[in-house]
Amino acid sequence: MTSTAVRRSAVRRLLPADPLLRRLALMSLVNTIGNGLFVTVAVLFLTRSVGLTPGRVALGLSVAGVCGVCAGVPMGRLADRVGSRRLLLVVGPLEALAVLGYAFVHSFAAFVALACVATVLERGAAAVRSALIARTLPAESQVRSRALLRSVMNAGLVIGSSGAALALQADSYAGYVTVMTLDAVTFLGATALLAGLPDEQLTERQSASAKAPVARRRTALRDRRYLLVTALHAVLELQLPVLTVAIPLWIVLATDAPAAVVAAVDVVNCLLVVVFQVRASRGVDDVRSAARACARGALLLAVGCLCYAAARHGSAALAAGVVLAGALVHSLGELLTSAGGWTLSLDLADPRAHGEYQGVFMSGQAAAHVIGPMVVALTVVDHGVAGWVVLAGLFVLAGTAFPVVTRRAARPAAVH
Image 1 (cartoon, helix red, strand yellow):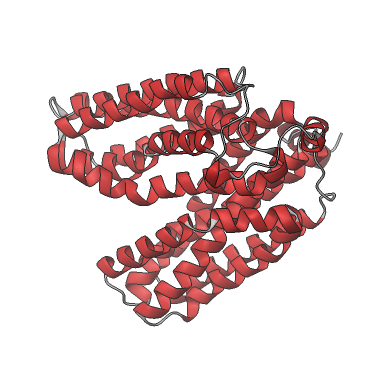
Image 2 (cartoon, rainbow, N blue to C red):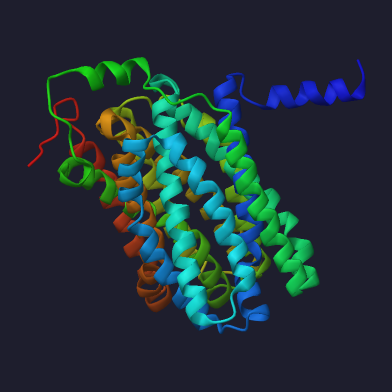
């Protein structure tokens, strides 16, 4: 066997056996490599090449984040009408144009307008992709498939971030624009892979449910149980700003741990997600097990917060060890809450309106990511150890509520 054949055999073992899931995984990999490239250089490009102040960049991104929160539901409803695949074939090239548009930004107003458009497309596309997965993959393998896709996505982000190092080193307008061009190419590549997918069809279980004349079609924005589950899971999604904002600030400002621990925390989180997300999703296959997974994951997130708080006292080596232990527990909690959230977002939705329901759920996540930095500032930054205790309590309360809220999930949700 030639070396080329050996390499191809290895690649086949790494990719999913199912051809549909394999194509979705390749789409995710290509797309997130581009995301990793762009996110790594975006802020430096806007400050060093465009000339915006860090404060204006933060303000513009906050405004764009709010716009993104509002994008999920209308995009999801549109996907329910025209089809997720068909809509993504249009959105992908638009995302490529939006990224290229940053090369022509020369004012704050233009930056805010473009950032809003790009974020609306990004958040809307995330909801539509989630609906596409819900409609095309078998219901019994949804959670495991999403876990695999999340592992692939994190691997893509790591690859993209690493590739952006050259542009960061060059620190030039040409280097940054090259990265944006590559990101645009990845959007087009993911769209080309999408075009090769068969037309989406409801799985057998979903088709039977959709054809059943028992109940009228539900509306996500009037489905109170689904909205409550979305809100509870949004609380758990505060773990992301804790990871990306609170921990770096805490390490640098409040502990004796070396600043390099910030990068180590990111590495621990990414590696655990890439390696263990599929394993963490095993057994999370119905509403009851998903609620338990969210409850256990929330408890682990709370323990992680208490570990971070404990790092306030101690030598540099001890503080670093405690922070890394907290990051390990935190990441395990993230794995469980993600697996539980996927199952709940699918099993509690009306299969005839997956686009709208996934839009609502994704908007909840986006809202948590937008307000998360403010929550972190009001707790950890302003109140230190007491703030970590408050965050831990918030995670525990949200996690405890999941089994209660979903206890009667087998019955039709109340719609008024």
